[in-house]
Image 1 (cartoon, rainbow, N blue to C red):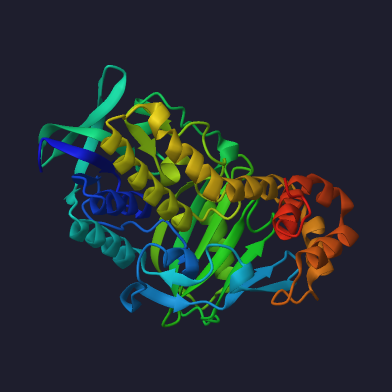
Image 2 (cartoon, rainbow, N blue to C red):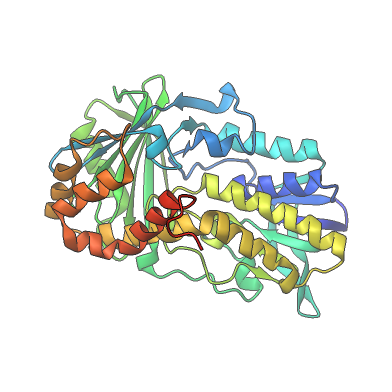
Length: 408
């Protein structure tokens, strides 16, 4: 550990590790700091990720791939099952990871690129001089250290203090937080090629239950519910009830709990000498809660912008705005669309969810055309489609761009 680095990254999850790797590969001196003594633990994640998006950042390795999925089942409150192919099922469907091994592999990749790594090192504050972030104060091996840097990248998760210390509003209302619980269950006897999502206000108010197969008759079985819609019920109690009813032979061998931001991005993710990435920037999908792919994409952009800013000798917020613009262009639009879907679907009663499932149960999602899906949904619930019109307008623009329609 040195007294000064070009970049200090706080948090060694996917966002922080990719940021550290990218910056180190650009020739920068990098310190990657993790407060826990073990990388990748505890696992607060269903561990699903898109194959295509993951492969943009790291070569797949069988040692951290538990299952390879073909698609997803969505089960309505009345039991109708909608099957979607991997390509149409979202950025959480593809590989099911062993996050403990996967996260360590990402950190190993950072170290191989030249980054220094500190574990069990707790950042206690930022060094701020002349209205700019220029380092961190941290506790390591019982001693306080002050380490200077040109840029700090905050990847310290949903409870992020880095942004708050830099004057960025990272607060979350209960209506914008998914409280989650997850069990690792053995003896589940489920299809190892498909994940499943159970929706309905009785089993998961304003949320859903997920099953992600992990091979060897294991599965992650979890739940996420909105904090202001629980009616006083705890997520872990709802999950226990679900497992007892639906997987009576299952044996729970691990339990974790946590929170996921479901707010959409915060207004600002940069300051002089600072960038926020991943859950610290609220870049997870507000509808599904998935965040691995978005975190890695944002981490890569932050590492690239850090290298450019340092080369230019300009660490100001205006220089770092390139990060803000790029990540919002690449992943921000999908997050905004997902927020529309969340705000619409999480307010639907079970009767409407059943009606929607009924309207699309015969649609072949492997061959599904966007217009076919919209038509089926319109027949079911015109009011719902009116609420979703901003999303459909954007999708139509994407579909017909390049064909002369909607071209600017």
